Length: 353
Image 1 (cartoon, rainbow, N blue to C red):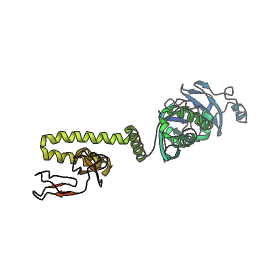
Image 2: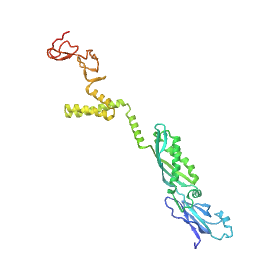
Image 3: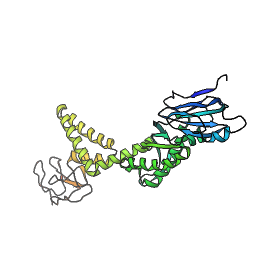
Image 4: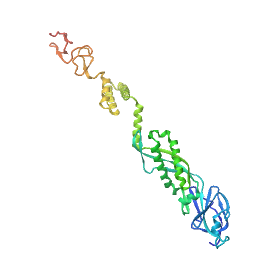
């Protein structure tokens, strides 16, 4: 290099650029008394012979043995204080880097007090800034010419996911309580991350959990469970559904005539039974509503004396006490009469004792 460096600066740093090196490769001949210019949002770490001599804050600095004390010993060699020296400078962007994304690569296995074992996915955002430029450069940036947020995103994400899994396991009972604890979980995890990050000269400015969710099929089961809770009394709900369907079917049947109305009622009743998934149980309820039978009476089973519904297999009518199960045929008109009939219901002929 034909001329010695007299001004050292890095005026332009990209939005996601964390460090920039001057010169980009190797070192340069720097004149003692050269000006080091550090912007408001920067710090500069000065190196010579691979050693970090000092860290400079924002402002204009004259490189001399007064503000770089270690140069006193390094330059008090046969070359003399007036000789140029080879050195390099690493500029560190001190701004806060916001909206950094984190998320689980694989689901976290979580022991849930309500759902037993469930796999969870989580994602969110965080912000960080460099707290100790010299430590950061020496531990993470090494000797690269530029270093951006994408270079540390995977590294930081592994720390975050580990802390998320550990904190959830210790402080969360069930994912059903997540909605009320997002802020507390975020604050607790951030506190643990600060100690992890500071080893690399970084501090976490902000940390948020945006979502923690189980797999889709588990979410569907949770939705079904909440739906059943909303129904409340299942028997009452079934009766309401049956009555509502009967009302709709009866209304439709009135417009289509008698036969069509009857068929509509039966179709509606069977459809409800199948749709709600209770099969024959619901169909039986609808059948009772249609026929007017109750207490286990079969459709079409009526007392031969008073006409009241009679349970299947009953020998006597529960209403009038008349004997069931036999008939008397009139010899005059062939009319079938009840077993206890004394006269024919059609022609009046008396039956023998």
